[in-house]
Image 1 (tube, rainbow, N blue to C red):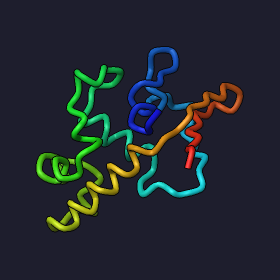
Image 2: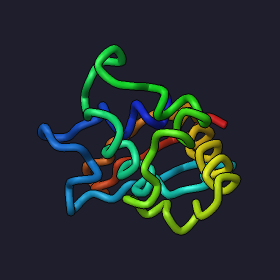
Image 3: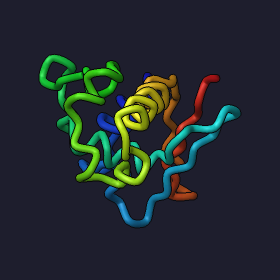
Image 4: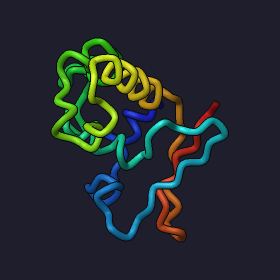
Length: 121
């Protein structure tokens, strides 16, 4: 699955894992992400409905950098610091798309209270 799917479709006891205070998100990867999984989760949370089918969401917010550049309100998020100019918004949107479309496997380690994202780079 892709990272954006893992962040929007994997739940534990009907709660998104990032919303569980006693669970940590651990990324297991070789090539680093541009943004932390939590930052990406908060972005996804503002543009997609959690648990929704593809046809119920505007997936251009995770697949189309130009669409993100033109339609996302960067000033309403933590991304504001990275997106002062148009060129910075384009770069930021490309980085968001690259991160969210990486392939992952998901492991829930109940003993360690970890939501493990195992990237298949």
